[in-house]
Length: 193
Image (tube, rainbow, N blue to C red):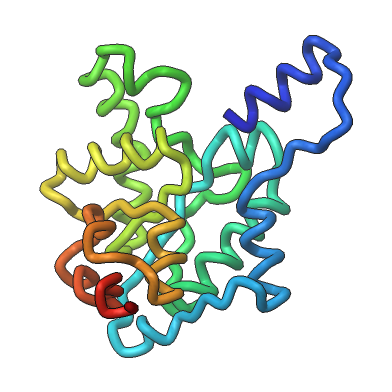
């Protein structure tokens, strides 16, 4: 969606008085300023390992490596630098997950999964317990690839880990977390009253 807006404004020369930004830039800014008070202490003893998918439309096609660096800063801030394992290659050179561009909805499931084997092998090489997929299409594709490998890794949204690190992730928001994280810092709204 971000890429589409940016490309559409440029292609059709639409006059506008705003800049299209990415949320990763804001998360990083807010963490650096102390306005988003994330914390990785929850993972100091657990030592759960994470890797991150660089979304094609956001990193390679739109904002480049500066946003990829912001993404890594955010992830390390919420899971601990020592618990982050980068895929190789990464950033602007990371492999596409194989789910974008309508491929998830195309009906060519076998072809999508075959293409996705490259991504699955890349994730497996990290030996990470979780793959953080900030893009919705990446999340669906990477989750499906994990299902095909009997959950060789868990797939999680970036915002889920941000909320977990803030201690505000509710019990009903843990669908994509494995058993190792289901009860970590569980926030019960009824106990806050």
